[in-house]
Image (cartoon, rainbow, N blue to C red; front, side):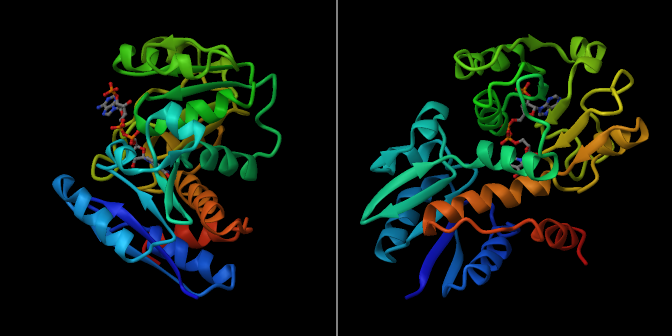
Amino acid sequence: MTLKLGLIGHPISHSLSPWIHAKFIDLAGLNGEYKLYEGNPNQLPDVLTQLKQNKIDGFNVTIPYKQVVLDYLDELDSDAEILGAVNTVVNQHGKWKGYSTDGEGYVRSIIESFPSLLNKDTSVLILGAGGAARGIYRALVQKRLKRVDIANRTLDKAKELLPLGKDFTPSEVLTFHTAEKNLSQYDLIVQTTSVGMKPKVQEQIIQLDNIRKDTVVSDIVYQPIMTKILQDAKVHGARIHHGHAMLLYQGQLAFEKWTGKKLDVSHLVDELEDKLRGE
Ligand code: NAP
């Protein structure tokens, strides 16, 4: 039997997901395929009909469909419902169930690199309050940490995240200026804005002059691998965590939802880095 997987979104021709899931299919010892189903925003119903006809086992969802796809699903995982976004769909005996694996994938990637970082004494600062930040915030607060604060250009958007965390971990919304001044309070700083992404690789969202050396600076942007803020974190003697690790682990979790198999993918972090560097 061939496992049928894929990705819907636009544009997706440069996606790394086919590479990642081909590796996972091999590791799991399965026969399978992971195809790209590209379509512009008006073509979503047609793309989904094609997937239904193909009896696809599961698929990933990316921009611009992460919210609008909810209308076409039979069931939602509780976190996906709370987040209002889906990046993974599982075909369960003909019914499509939606999940969001970004947040938990991020947390898995951090724990893999820094196993004891997240505990009741950990203070986290998230920079940004977009779609990715939402999932990451939700997954981090559920770890019942000391605090998870959010700094964003548009403060109202950051305030909209707070209800996702109120039962789990204390949080405050900050300006970037206040965050820069208070940086020494944080054990983990998670950069989730698109600032620093190719082609604007010289941009950096905040300055790190007040950072502690034992702090981990994590950037979810993975193109380039070594963003400006990560370079700066190194100059300040801090520890760093790369965005492609999150990409890999959110895929690991999606594959687990599709197949029930939790693969050891740690050796693929370096392979993915080489792939991104074009080696
Ligand atoms: P999004 O929903 O559009 O959110 C963008 C965020 O960036 C918002 O907080 C926005 O602030 C901020 N921002 C954008 N331009 C800015 C600027 N010039 N100055 C200050 N803030 C700015 O995007 P997203 O889906 O969350 O994705 C964000 C980044 O994460 C992208 O680079 C994406 O490639 C990356 N990502 C990586 C992974 C992974 O697996 N590693 C997964 C998902 C996303 P405002 O609210 O003020 O507009």
